[in-house]
Length: 147
Image (cartoon, one colour):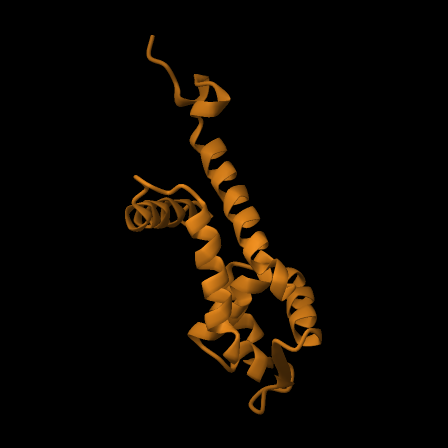
């Protein structure tokens, strides 16, 4: 009888390795972001804004796969800490546009250097990050088709 992928021990389950990797990334980024008083989800919002500034909250949520209930507290905290500003859209008063503050714009490089330093602390020899990212994109795309 052929072994099912579900008959494998915990350590041989893809879901467990993805879970462990996600937790590991979160911990690594939280260490790097600690001095900036940023969480990993807050950093993801900043990444989205560094890609495209002055955008609707809805657009950020769509890019990050976050609902408004998850995203609003993150944005409120980032605004309170001076990373971004929020203002009503001129086209639709119900919509809100989010923009990076000067702090948000000028801190990009130093944040990335802190993350790079943390990544360099990890022993990633033999890990092909680009290949891994492509594989994870394939996996995520396959998972999205099941919604």
